[in-house]
Image 1 (cartoon, one colour):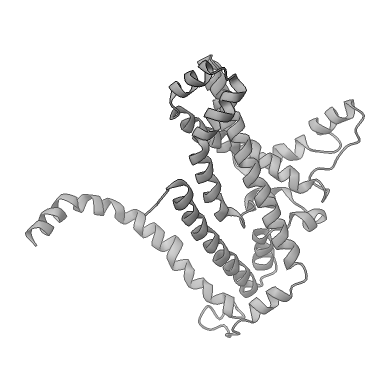
Image 2: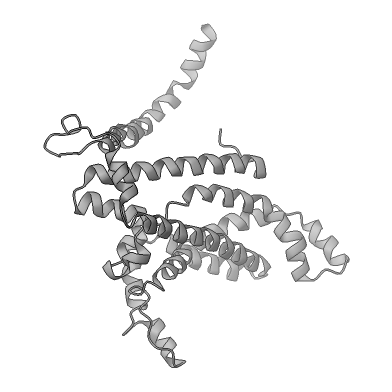
Length: 301
């Protein structure tokens, strides 16, 4: 006991420092979980959580019978998977290209420029993208017109909208991902490049036989951790850029929950959709961490 008391006297300031963070997590993360009960109710706001009638799994039954639910899940997974693949390929490529630059000031300047969009909100970026992608006055369509290509309504055409979301998301976030892979590149032993050069390997062969194998652990790690985001296609981005004409290809689980819960006041049904998404996401996250441990020897706990 004397040892525990000495330990407590030494570490109590650290526990005290944690109290505000623990309080915030409890208030904003755990207390709201009581709202899960709405998924099993026909929720009436003036009756509250404990006064609304209990209807069991009827909200989930309605969800399964909803005519567009298959399309909504497909849109979510389709957009999210494309973002994961592009968000992995582009930062790796840019990191390798930046690593080949010999002038340090050019490398740092370019790295700063591509990193800046990460700090801009989608509310601001959506206004920029609406102007840039406008079919009548957008810079991109004016450029396409120079080559005789007819204007494309990127944000109003179901055939183009998902790809516009993927490209704009990669443009915003690839600078942040590049930093991770540049850090991985610094861990590669320079003697491996010297040995490859002595054996007659050029820059391309050095990239494929030294650089990429050296980056593979972090690549596998980032890929497995991103599996948990398969059902997160980017609510803020799509919500600020989509419109009714592109619901067919743009409507995802999060925007569907927003419309059902906030706009149409179907609180119980929207909670059921969100709960189902959370359960599936939890399964994906658990699987991704198991894979990260087995494939990349990465552990959180």
